[in-house]
Image (cartoon, rainbow, N blue to C red; front, side):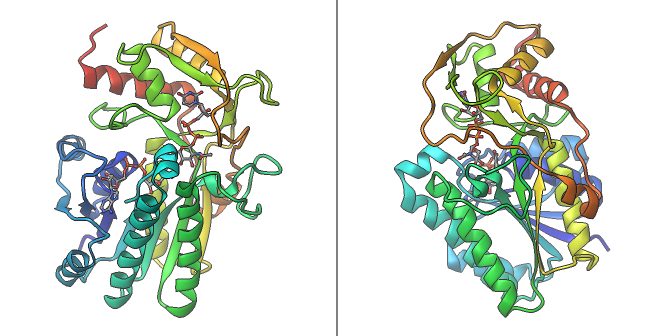
Length: 343
Ligand code: NAD
Ligand code: UD1
């Protein structure tokens, strides 16, 4: 019988790509999402790619009673992947309580119900933001955690603490926390992709929307960093590669292969690229000149961070397949298709 996987935040950007990979591996997928940052139409894209539908329930995980009712009807889940969270760094600075409430109450309600129903396996979406500005790069999982620059980042650190504490008191609980670096790009079909609501905060959607004529000009935040070209360095990982790591993690938990009850893996490419590198890559694959300007630094930005991915490579047997150019092209193809741009 197909294993049943609950994907919270499954209509969101990374969640939708992961649902596709799970369906293609014959898992039965159950999505919970409150649609606060995603569109229900994403389900059509998922079905077109995978040839099957996930189950969908519109539900807010901060709603204690609705979540409990859901688990009463779905007590036989084999694993949970918890993506649902608010993720805007700027917004979290402006509205910290909304971020703490949403991201932490969701996790607590979810864990409470998993424990009550003895659902043992959880994959959690963490972030490289927990490392703050690392002392050295590439950064590995043993690096000390620094104070994150935003309440959003703090919710990820606190969530990891909540999970670590929970596995001590609940002996059947097994957790894999995946620390994503910078996920970008879209599914090769261009049927699903990154669809930020409003003005994008993140670099790649801002690049593609500028090229599509929706934004006038990209601002490159800071050209006086201590890096080769003065702009910040990040580890940009293809979203489908990232999604595949979740399937591997679920397999590991379900098949009792975890070595510890709480495992952490960095998910990145292991390579750092500057903002100008990312722009050059976009211009190369799209054949378009991007309208951009160098401006002051953005407060709270880390100068440089990229991942040591040897732990995920060796223990999960996972590694990235797509390079920056291929991933940038997928982001551009998605933007063009979504906006109906013909070239
Ligand atoms: P996203 O906003 O596209 O997806 C999150 C989904 O969760 C959305 O569909 C939203 O509607 C839903 N959601 C939010 N709060 C909810 C709640 N209380 N109840 C039910 N549904 C709720 O974000 P994403 O980029 O797919 O990110 C997924 C996860 O990965 C998040 O936890 C995010 O913090 C983490 N992450 C993202 C990045 C990134 O750059 N995208 C980097 C590191 C970590
Ligand atoms: C941030 C968060 C990360 C979070 C992610 C998703 C921090 C340190 N990082 O990543 O935890 O998971 O967002 O929301 O809080 N840039 C520009 N112009 C733009 C946009 C971005 O120059 O218009 C630059 C930024 O200065 C940065 C790089 O592009 O150097 C990547 O930025 P972005 O895509 O926003 O991701 P992070 O800030 O790395």
